[in-house]
Amino acid sequence: MIIRRTAAFLRDYRALPVAIRERVDKQLRLLFENFRHPSLRLKKLKGTDRFEIRISKGYRLTLRLDQGVMEIRRVGTHNILRDEG
Image 1: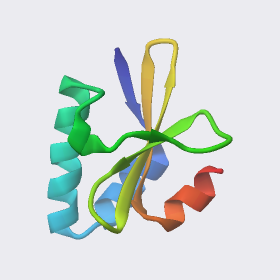
Image 2: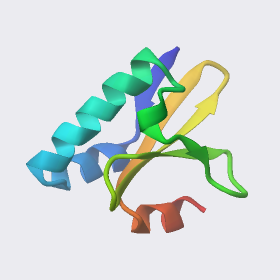
Image 3: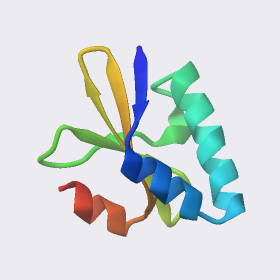
Image 4: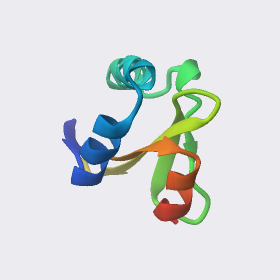
C-alpha cells in the first residue's frame, strides 16, 4: 500500500504537543502493521469516504483509502472532524 501524507497533516502534526506527537507515531505504527488493530478504534466518518483513528480522548487522526493508497489527511482535536465533512 502506498502511504501519502497531506500538507495539512504535516502542518497539524508539527503544531501538536510532543506527547501527542509520540502517541500519533505509535498509532501510525499500529496502523501500518495492522489496519484493524483494536486500539486504533478505527471508524468511518458518516457521510464521507474518510475514517478516523483515536489518538487520545481529545485527539483524532483522519485518513482516506483509495485503490491501494492510504492518505493521512489531518490530525488534531475533534474540530478537525468538522473540517473533514
